[in-house]
Amino acid sequence: MSTVQQPDPRDRPARLTVGVVGAGRVGPALAASLQLAGHRPVAVSGVSDASRRRAALLLPDVPLVRPAEVLERSDLVLLTVPDDVLPGLVEGLAETGAVRPGQLLVHTSGRYGTRVLDPALRAGALPLALHPAMTFTGTPVDVQRLAGCSFGVTAPEELRLAAEALVIEMAGEPEWIAEESRPLYHAALALGANHLVTLVAQSMELLRAAGVEAPDRMLGPLLGAALDNALRSGDAALTGPVARGDAGTVAAHVSELRRHAPQAVDGYLAMARATADRALAHGLLKPELAEDLLGVLSGETPGTHGGTEGDAG
Image 1 (cartoon, rainbow, N blue to C red):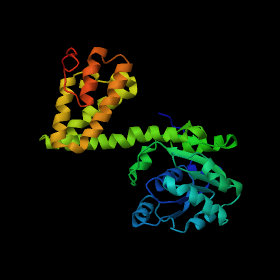
Image 2: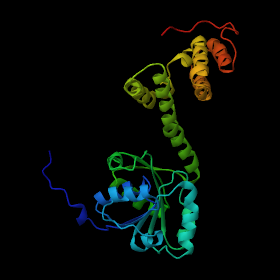
Image 3: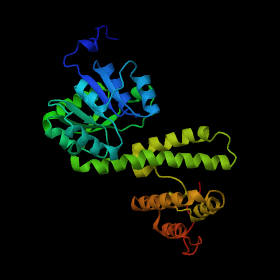
Image 4: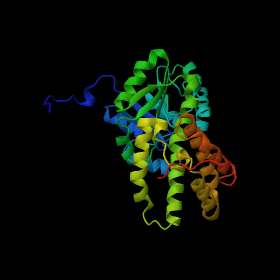
């Protein structure tokens, strides 16, 4: 182990005063992470009681002030508001003269690049889009989760080094996303992360209905292994009755879901069709079995097309 003493972050040059506009789950966590790197949070704005509690928990002793005052006090401003609110907020801040020339203005929206900050750019601000690819809880654990977290970064060429430095100081990994690719990038993350929560929650509900006392304990190892396999192998990790072409099993699933959880049927069918398409395209699902399977997913009775039996297991 090295015995070389690490420098105190406070001794590093170019430390910035940091402000947060929008004390949701993301902003206070990022500001707290920047504080660990030696920057100094000086102001935060938040309206709801939950926002104020998060700010007090993650940024104790940092005053709660109006958004315009956050900008007045800060060299680096984190705009951490919902996507649909961001354009209007930026326009309003620019129109009221709150934006200072040379001020770093950073938003954390996955949807937008830096173009949404154009009104502030015309006022002299330095625009950055830094989106952490992470789900947040609004608690101190979020700061720890930023270690190794990828950030979708969009920045003008002359600010790339500054953007990269900020992400690295938060222990993250910068991933450069072109302005025009931001909506697709964000859709990909939502498809994986947001829909995963829905799928897992539905699965736990069905297991409880089937009499399983600890569905979380049952699913944990299974889903962990499935996620690991998918990240390592992509479509080659597909398993289960759809990938095998077990039309009879899939028909039984649909029948049971219609009886016990009709609200889950549409999601099951949609994901099963998508799985079948990918398994067929990658040679995992035999074409002679796919016809019966796709028929079941369209509401037909198994065996209508005279398919052969799939592998056991």
